Length: 183
Image (cartoon, rainbow, N blue to C red; front, side, top):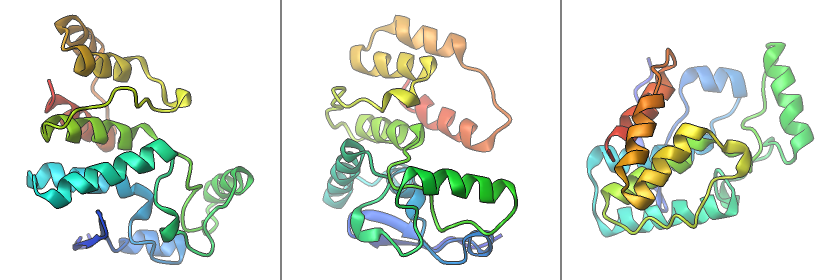
C-alpha cells in the first residue's frame, strides 16, 4: 500500500497518485479527479477551522457551481476534453487498455456535493441550499438528507434513516459515515 503524503496546492489538498493509478493512467495527476472530495475530507478529518479552510470551502463551492471536478489550471495533456472521449475511455478501461489520465472535467458525481454540505454544516457556515447537484445525480435518500439539513425537520431525518441501506462498497460506507456527522 502506498503512503499518502498530502500537500496544499492553492486552496486544495492534493497527493501523488498511488502506484496502481500510475500503471493504469501512465502519468501522475496528483489526485485531481477527487480534488473536492479529498480537500473537504482532509479538512473535516483534521477539524481544520483556519481561515485557509474557509477559503478552501469557498473554492470548492465555486468548482461545484461551475460543475467542474478540478480548476482549469490543473488540466493536463491527455485529459478527456469531451464526452465522446469520456465514453471511449470507459470502453478502453473495460477492455483493460491503458486509460487516459482522468475522465471529463465536468463529469461530476454526488461525492463532492455530499462532502461540501457536510463540511459547511460542521464548519458552522451557512449552507446555501440554493446550490443543488445536477439532476442526473438525484438519489431519493440523498435528497431526503439534504432536505433535513435545510429544514431541520426530524421527519426528513427519520425518512433518511429508514431508507438507509448498508453497502458492501467501502466508498459508500465512507459517505454514510460523513453524512452521519450531520445527523
